[in-house]
Image 1 (cartoon, rainbow, N blue to C red):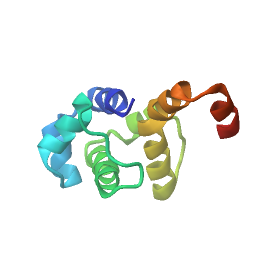
Image 2 (cartoon, rainbow, N blue to C red):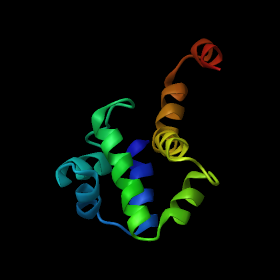
Image 3 (tube, rainbow, N blue to C red):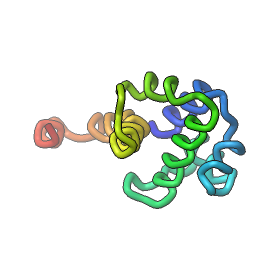
Image 4 (tube, one colour):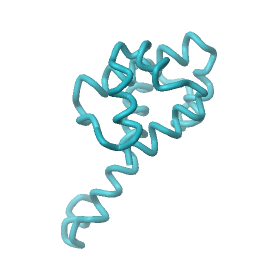
Length: 111
């Protein structure tokens, strides 16, 4: 679930939702709603792009890039590769949840 991944990320990076909101240039209440699960941004939406940019900016400016790379499970990425890996990581459990609610036929088709 997106909220679980975002909470893990914030805890691991030791950053508050308010601080991250500043880096992402989005309202702190949007981060709070994402974190508590009342709002999940669209996979290809503006909010998640801003969030990813903010996470990467925060890590870069606060010496946390190695921690982020380890969390996401990628080594020596380009900026675009890191953005894509982070996007996939944030939605990792969400995709599994969707597949778990699908019928066996739908799960096979998705593979």
